[in-house]
Amino acid sequence: MVDGRQTEPTLLKMFVGGLMSVELLIAHVESYRDAALERLTVYAKIDVTNTRRAYDYFHYALLEHGIAHARTTVRWADAYLRELRESGDAERALEAIARVRGAIAAH
Image 1 (cartoon, rainbow, N blue to C red):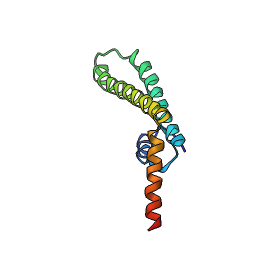
Image 2 (image 1 turned 180 degrees about the vertical axis):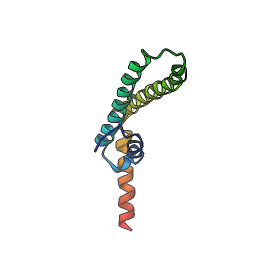
Image 3 (image 1 turned 30 degrees about the horizontal axis):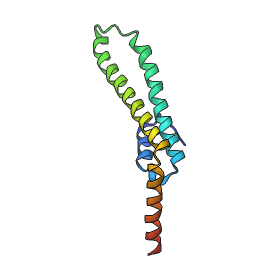
Image 4 (image 1 turned 90 degrees about the vertical axis):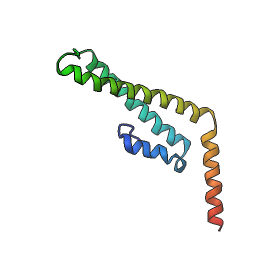
């Protein structure tokens, strides 16, 4: 199942990307990116209502953190998706993993 809203499991799946197809890895990264975009939409709605006074002053600090984190996630995901789709590096990495697995199995 691909669900980028579940941050830790999604990051773990990307960490072990060598155990899946590039297409599935792309789906996980896209889902993770989409979840960050959804968070940005929510944060934008909150931002326009935040007065930055009283309690809102303290809430805004965390809102800024969330916005910065989500924007960084989107930028990272966009760059990684370009790399996965265009560079061929992921396919070469998977081929190298297959060779290692084959060599291990042969012994």
